[in-house]
Image (tube, rainbow, N blue to C red; front, side, top):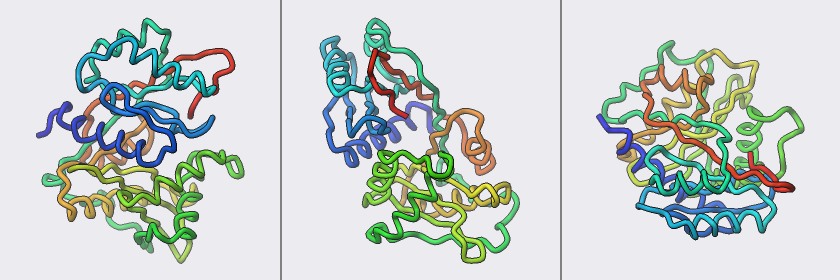
Length: 269
């Protein structure tokens, strides 16, 4: 069984590599990266940080200046394995907790990949060619529809999601029933790790096992590609976490998202 630290050693660099690949402006920070796109973008954050040893105070000051000079809150995702010097330095500079995110994992060699309730009736799952711009556009809208009310998806999120789904390290799946696209999910690959991301299901088709079927399809692909572990990042207690538990995922660790508020600074989602 992998330890929490071993899972983090797979997952945190994968996340940092993705941020670096999809973000227009990226700088190294504390062994990971910090990125900026535009105000309101999820890319305005640092991740994969604090795993390479002590972080000097002037490096933390550089991160603060990087974001504040661009009008957004400095924001960092911290794993519990971040060096204490970074945690203490952020506290001294007024960073506060914004949210928590659980990282779940499943060792693919041990996974059974069985659906608890069997295959949903009429469900067809297919992979999207991420070179097909129109197909990616459709997948983006399906993905984000699960997180925003109709007509209220922010433009920066659409742009960032399309860039992410178009990456060569990302595979995108669409789920259909009776020819209607009713769900989407993607998987991002790193060195030995596959991260199951961005699942969204039409409310009219929920509670039928569609999300679990999408998990199975992506885990099968990850095992074909010889990944050691699959991960899922989830806010605590939401349906994604419960579905992951039913598919054999267990808790690895909790990320803490911290930010430094300031007058006139735009928070990131």
